[in-house]
Image (cartoon, rainbow, N blue to C red; front, side):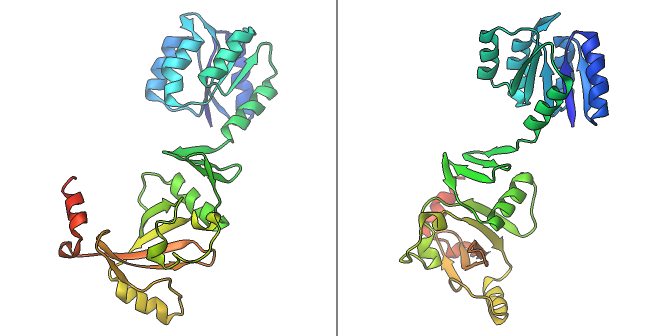
Length: 265
């Protein structure tokens, strides 16, 4: 864990450097705004502890223009206890506000609480890893234990390639129902708002035959989907997660609608 302390009081800097070291926290100290800006331009930190009154400017301005835009959790540590400044800090997005004099162990405890709070946002999906809650467009999506594990794995490896996993989706409607053969099946909404993992295979028909011989039960047999440009089949794992296996179709098998869409890109 690397924390940046922006504090012009040398006694406080030295005291916190010692205490943080004793707690296995890497603390980097800066005494002014200019040095802080230069450091942040070339280094990454997990959190910032920031004084408000600094020799070359205001901590609020530093936070607004150089820290907040980097989405770095920040604790204001200042002698300024004016209510309007405390409110201002939180309205700007500060993680915490501590007034001097302060207790070092309390500061470390607050810092650990903030950094251990894992809330990840990916577009309109919010994943609270502490509470194990997933929301999409502010609606809670109920996932099984396995679904949480898969989602957690994918989120923690964003922008990395996972061998064999072609796609990932969270559904909040029944649009997949006709494809997987459950359009008339009575299911609670929570069971339909599911996760799907899609795997590309060399030959979906050969895969179907091989897995069926091993006793795997499928929702559907291999089916051409000209509007999607692939031949697909579906099955569910033991926790009812939807699995798609597919092989791309030849271009001449694409629907006219898909061909028209491809021309736009």
